[in-house]
Image 1 (cartoon, helix red, strand yellow):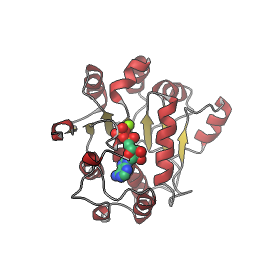
Image 2 (cartoon, rainbow, N blue to C red; image 1 turned 135 degrees about the vertical axis):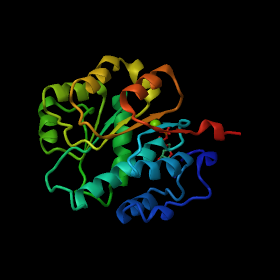
Image 3 (cartoon, rainbow, N blue to C red; image 1 turned 30 degrees about the horizontal axis):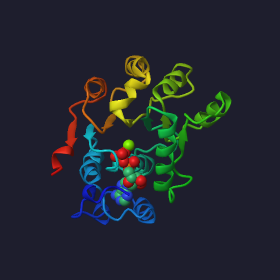
Image 4 (cartoon, helix red, strand yellow; image 1 turned 180 degrees about the vertical axis):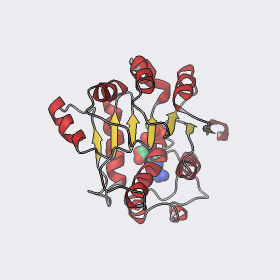
Length: 233
Ligand code: ADP
Ligand code: MG
C-alpha cells in the first residue's frame, strides 16, 4: 500500500469513469485501489490527453499505475476506435532498468488487465526466456512490451521487435536506468530510426538527476512536469 500521505483523499477512481473503461475500474476495485494517489490523479488525465509527462514522486507513490492505467486505456481506445485496426501491433513499450522491476511491472499490469484478457497482450521480454520463445511471443505483436533497454535494442536490431505502431513509451526509474549500463543502448534506441515520428513519452523518477535531464532531452517533447516532492510538509 502507498503511504497514506500519498493518497489523494479528495479523489476516487470512480470519478474517472468518463475516461476509464469499466473493466479497468473493476480491476482497480479488485486490487483494493479505492482512491488514486496524488501522482495518479495528476498523471492519468494528462496522459489521456497525450501529453508527454515527467513525473517525479517518491518511491511508493504509485508511479507504476500512474502510467499503466492510461497506457491500458489508450490501448483499449486504439483497439475499439473507428481508426483502430484489427491487426495486432505493439503500441506501448515500457523500459525498465532491471529484470526484477520488469517482473513487478508485469504483475502490476496483469492485475489491471484482469478483465481485458485476452484482448490485451503483454510481453515481458526480460524474463529468462530463450531467444526462440521471445521470437514466438513477439511475432504476435503484443500490445504492451516490457524490456530493459539492452534487450529492447537487440530485439529491434534483429527486427524481432517492431515499434512502427508505437503510441506510448515509458522509461521507469529514469534516475537509475542509465547507471545500470543502459546508457548507450537507450541512446541508440532513440537515434537508430526505431521509433515512429509521433508518440507519447513518460519519464518516471523518484529524484531529479542529471541522468533524468539527459533522458528528458532524448525522450520528451513539451512535457508536463509533475513534481510531488513540494507537496511534502
Ligand atoms: P513507485 O513506483 O512510485 O515507487 P509503486 O507503483 O510501486 O510505487 O506503488 C507502491 C505500492 O502502492 C504498490 O504495492 C502498489 O500496488 C500500491 N498502490 C499504487 N497505487 C495505489 C492506489 N491508488 N491504492 C492502493 N494501493 C496503491
Ligand atoms: Mg516505481
